[in-house]
Structure formats: C-alpha cells, structure tokens
Image (cartoon, rainbow, N blue to C red; front, side, top):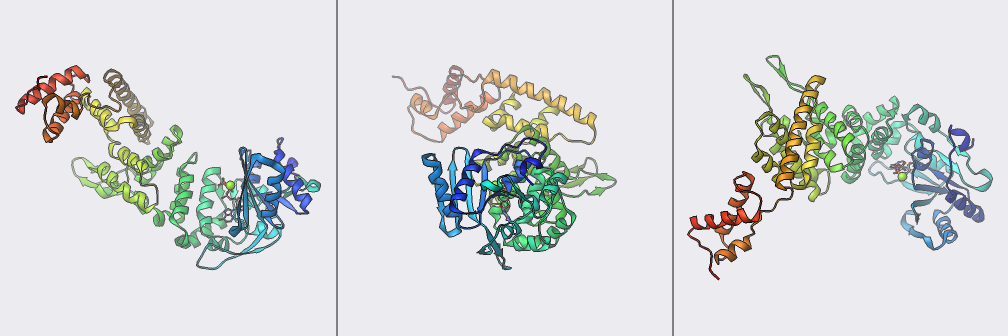
Length: 477
Ligand code: ATP
Ligand code: MG
C-alpha cells in the first residue's frame, strides 16, 4: 500500500526522501524511513527528525548522502554505534543499518547483529513506531506495516509488536515511553500491553534516573499531563519513581470531616496551569506546590484539617526532590522553590483587607516571577463547586488589579533600595560595617511599609536621620 492511499489527505513527502532514496539506489541498498517520523506523518504532526534504515551499512549511506547534499550538510559518524547523523537545514537525519537485537536480563543494552527490515521492525517498541516507508525509486512511498500500526493509529492505541512482557522486560524504559506516548498523543494503552507494564514495572530499576526523568518531563510537557500521572499511578510505577507524589493520594476522614484528595487536586492544578504555560519549571511548581501537605496534615476539632507550613516544608524539600530526580540543581530549582514557598501569598491577600504594604512585600520577594506566581495561584483555584471557583476567581482578579496598581505606582519589580552601601559609607565617612547593613535594610523596610517613597531624595533624608540615631553625621567636604 502506498502512503498516499493511507491517509485521507494529501501527504507531501519532502524532497530529501527522494534524494536519500536515489543515493541508496546508486549504492544498491534497500532504504526506508521508519519510526516516529512515519507515525507523525500519518498523524499530521510535522517533524524534522527523520530516521533512515537501510539493509547494509547506515554509515556508508550517510557518507554518500552527505556528498549528494554538498556543503550545507554536516555529517557526524558514530562508529561505535554503527550510526551516522546529518544536519541539513531544519532536518536532523539519522542513518542506521537494519539490525536484529537480543537482550540479557541485567541490561537494556542488547546484543546487536545485522538483520533485515523485518528484524529491525521487530525490535521496535510499539506497533505505531514500527511503520516503515520504502524510499527506493521503484517502491517509493510503499508502507510496510507488519503489526497493524496503521490500524492502531486510527484506534488511538499503544500496543507492543511482540509479547508485552518480553518487550518491557527487555527494555523497561519502554514502560515510561508507553505512558509518555499515550499522554502526548492522547492514546489508550492496549489492555494486554498495560498488563505487561504492571507485570514488569519493577524492572525499571535497571534504567538510569536521567532517562526516566527525561520521559517524565515529556509527560509533563504534554497538553493534558494528568493523564500520564494517572497511568503511572494505576500501573504502580509512581510509587517507585516519585514516592512523594504518590503520598498525596488518599483522603482521611475524622468526625465526618474529609479533606481534598491532594493527588487529584495537584493534577487538576497541573492541567490548569498547562493551559496557561509551556514553561516546564512553572509546571513543576504546580506539581510540587502541595507536596508537603501529607507531612503537615493535622486535625483540629474547631477548624478541621490544616496543613500549616506545607509551603515552607515543601520549598525545603525541592532541592532533595530535584537531586533524586536528577533535575538541574541551578536557578530553575531556585525558581521552583520560590514559587512553592510563596504559592499561598496572593490567595491570602484575597481574604484580608489588603494593605499596599503587604503587596509591596510580595512584589519585593517575587521580583521578576510575580506573573508566574499569579499563574500558579490562579491554577490552584479548584473546587467541585463551579460557583465557588467563579467567586474565588473574581476575588483573585481584584488582587491582581491591586498588584498591578501598586507595581505601576511604586516600580517595585526587581526593586533595589535607592541608597547603596557605598553611599552610606561615603556620606558618613565610615568603614564597611554592620551599621551600614542595618541602615540599608531599615531604608528598604521603610519603602516596603510605605513610610517613604521609593525615591532617592526621601531615602537620603531617612539615611541622614537613621545615621543620627547611630551617632553619625554627614562628613563635611
Ligand atoms: P519522539 O522523537 O517524538 O520522542 P520517536 O518515536 O521518534 O518520538 P525516538 O526516541 O526518537 O522516538 O526513537 C525513534 C524510533 O526508534 C522510535 O519510533 C522507535 O521505533 C525506536 N525506538 C526508540 N527507543 C526505543 C526503545 N527503547 N525500544 C524500542 N524501540 C525504540
Ligand atoms: Mg524521534
């Protein structure tokens, strides 16, 4: 069957496929595009990563393709892996010879031999990833679909080509990939395949944390990430790879009073925020915002369930969780930590008679990240009662307006006190000392409290009078 007959729309195969096909013809090699590119072509998700398989040497094919494409193509050869890559404009082309694989129990790295296209398709993870299109001139566009991948694309189904237990035991990373593809494509996982995942989930221990986290991040960056987390939870893997999140699950009841299920609440917040942002780290802050709720949970007869301090404890856990998950321990982590720590602050401003001072303090502490904090807070408004949600959102809008007003008036984003330590030292003719710091911080506090304007002249006057209280007077010059 030709690829053009398969889809109900015009599929345009890029010229590069003809070029590679012609080069393969010259070398007398059978050549195909396979895997994700073919899948995405049929799903109408455009992609510039193209994987080629030939029956023979992938490196030899790549070297000839490079010659045919000329100067604009950059070739990299990975002799140890028997693969080569060409970067050509937007395209990333990968070349490999068809291979047959066999596995040992202690590693996901298979023993590799040369093989046929069929061998190569057999080693692939899912039926929808095992599709190939021939690119040799006489068979150009022919679809080779040994496992019904095309049908599964139509049914929106993730299914392994071979026995699921074997597929997942051989390479347990495929468990994460199954859940990731299901989430990205919004597909179901076939029930036998899912049973295989459940049976083999403990094999995940042979997979490096980096690879697991890589897949987890792809789940998080999907349109509706909660689906992936529900699959991880249901198959039992969440407990292994992210126990703190698993702990959010469940509801306790005392004297007839229950609290929200924090797992499903967190997933709702994550889905909400995913409508507003593609920022992975803002999405991570949604995942982690209530992470310490189970640890701080108390029951009190008067007020019911409380989670006092969960924002501070959660922020404290962030580095630990990032380290365990091999997420970067840099400014991204600090950013998530800050948002977790501050996530209740804007909401608190809804309830109180809001003072400018409270808003100035929040602006000072969030700096550049105030908009992201507001996005997180807005996503955090969840309830089964739509009236309640509407009311909260309306209140929240008021806080947002107030913040905007104060910000525009006082220019507090990335606020730096208008008097520097050097000015204090210069003015009073003193040495760097504790007093300098104290005066500087008193000026900052006075601005945040609204006692003086965020302006040099007023700050200078305050500095002079603060100096007096320390027995300092301006040096005359
Ligand atoms: P994307 O690039 O969007 O993540 P993809 O399907 O292209 O999706 P890659 O990781 O680029 O995924 O892999 C390319 C192809 O290689 C896959 O389509 C699949 O056929 C095969 N493949 C990749 N990883 C595995 C694996 N762990 N086990 C079996 N086959 C795999
Ligand atoms: Mg790919």
